[in-house]
Image (cartoon, rainbow, N blue to C red; front, side, top):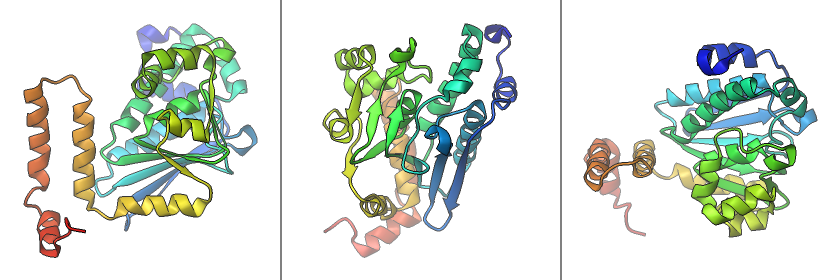
Length: 271
């Protein structure tokens, strides 16, 4: 199929859904406003099939509509984050035309994930390779467990980042380091991921990660979402005046609101 002239999300969903295996599922805690997005394909270290790509896009669509959410945790099942694309699936779509379809679909999904009105946290455990590293960097905040490996190994397969992640690698590491990392198929240990800014929280035991997550439940949902939107706007191409206006429009949605009034009564600013 000539995807360049006929691409649509609907056609891409129908096509990619044919490639079965694994799943991406979500559970929401409505009381806390926290969702858990689980990448599950145990026998392939959670590698993505076409069906899983469609699952992820549907999860992102649901999160876009979740007005009471504050946070989504993205993690893999059984101790691994994700090993990128399932090679048996990749072999079946190894034409430039199909590559266009997959790149457009997954790139769009990861952009939408990054722009969600809620905070996203990647829980980096075990292996996180290739496209999975692009998914990892698409999350707002990234945690890694001791022993994890974050690898930008796309070039080992004779390709480049395929899920629209190159710009995020540059944004995170800088131009020179990004070229080095991609050209050499670098793999980072958990400690190196922290040192290079790929992640900001390092932990050993699951309980440490769970305790870390509780930090994000202390402030109101409205304040968290407003902060996320301001940061998102700051990354757009705006003039200084346009950035200020965008921040002001968000600010006045929470200033003087019920959460603000309640915090003032409790004098919560002070330690």
